[in-house]
Amino acid sequence: MSQNARTEPLPPLDLTNTLMFAITLGITLTVVPWYGLTHGFTPADWVVAILFTALNGLGITAGYHRLWAHRTYEAHWTVRLFLLIFGTMALQNSAFAWCSGHRTHHLNVDDEDKDPYSARRGFWFSHIGWMLRRYPSGQEDFSNIPDLKRDPMLAFQHRHYLPLLLLANFGLPLLAGLVFHDVLGMLLLAGVARLVWSHHVTFFINSLAHMWGTRPYTEENSARDNPVLAVLTYGEGYHNFHHIFAHDYRNGVRWWQWDPTKWFIRGLSFVGLTRRLKRTPDFQIQRALLAMQFKRTQARLEAAPAIAAPRLEALRARVAHEYEGFLTAVADWAKVKEQWLAEKKRAVLEQWDHVDLQSKLRDIERGLSLQRRRLRILHAQIA
Ligand SMILES: [Zn+2]
Ligand SMILES: [Zn+2]
Image (tube, rainbow, N blue to C red; front, side, top):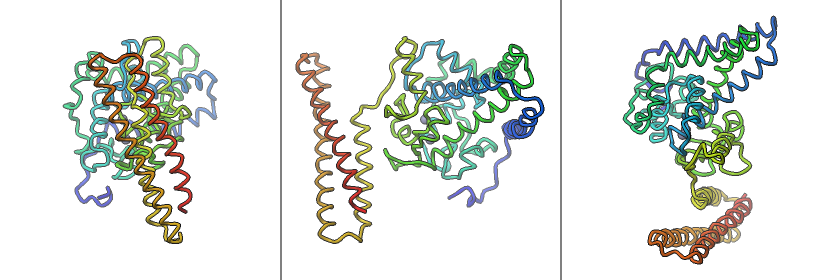
C-alpha cells in the first residue's frame, strides 16, 4: 500500500525538525544568494564550506554508518572523536538514534510499517517526510544498539546532543569567520548552505538509492547501485552491494568504483589508526553477481518468442549447461574452503597444503569470472 493509499490519519508534526529543515532551506534559497550577489563570498568562505561538507559526509559515512551502525572496522579513539565531531555537525540526530534507525532499516528494508524510511512509501517519505511527523515506524527503540550504548563517547554525545550540535554548527563556522574576517559570509555559506546540501545528499541514500540505478547483486530489496549518487555521497551510492553485504567496510567494491569513504578507512589502516577491516570473500561477491545474471538471462529466454525454435532450444541448452557449471563451482568452493578451515583449525596445515588449497580456491574463483563473461555474451545473443 503506498503512502497515498493509506487511510489512517497523519501523525502529529515534529515541529522541531520541520522548522529546522524549513528555515535552513529558506535561508539557503533566499538570503544566501542575496548575500552572494550583494556582498559576494570570499574564496575562504567557499573552501571552508566545501571542507566542512566533505568532513560532515565522512562523519556520517565512515562514522555513523560504516563504523557504528554496521561495525565494519575498528578505529583509534582519535579517529572516532574526529568522526563524531563532524557527524554531530551533519545534524542527523545522535549516533544512537541514527544507528538504531539504520539497523532497523536493514532488518526490515522496504517493509512499510517497520522500515523507518521505507522507499515503498514514496520519494518524499523516504527522503525527508519520515522525519517531519511522528510516525509509528520511526519510534525510537534502542534495544538494537546494546554495543553502542556501552561506548562512553557516543553516550556523551547522546546526552548532550543539543549543546554539541549548536557548538558544531555555529561555533565552527563562526571560528572560521573570525579567522578569515568574514563572519556573516562564513555563517551563511559554511554554516547554513553547507548543512542543507549535506542533509539532502545524505537523504538521497534513503530515497533515490532505493529507486534509481541497477541491481547487480540482488533483487530481494529495492536498493540500487548508482555511480552518480556515489560521487555525491562519498561512495554510499553502491547501495545494492551494501544491502546484501552490509558488514563489508566497502560499498564500491570494484577498484574503479568511486568510494572515498573506503579509501579513507583503508588509508588509515596503513598507519594503524583503523583495523580489522571486514571484507566479503570475493567468491561470495562473484556468486551473487552470477546468480543475478542467470536470473536475468532466464527471464529473457522466457520472453523471447521472436527467436526461431531450434535456435532458442540451443540457447536454452547452453544456459542450462552454464548453470550446471555454476552449481558445481559453488559446491566445489564450499568443499575446499571447509577442508582448508578444518585443517587450519587442527593446525596441521603445512605450508605446501596451504598454498595448494589457496590456489584451488583461486582457480574456482577465476572459473566464475570467466563464466560471467560467457553468460554476458549469451545474454546479448537472446535479443
Ligand atoms: Zn538502504
Ligand atoms: Zn547501511
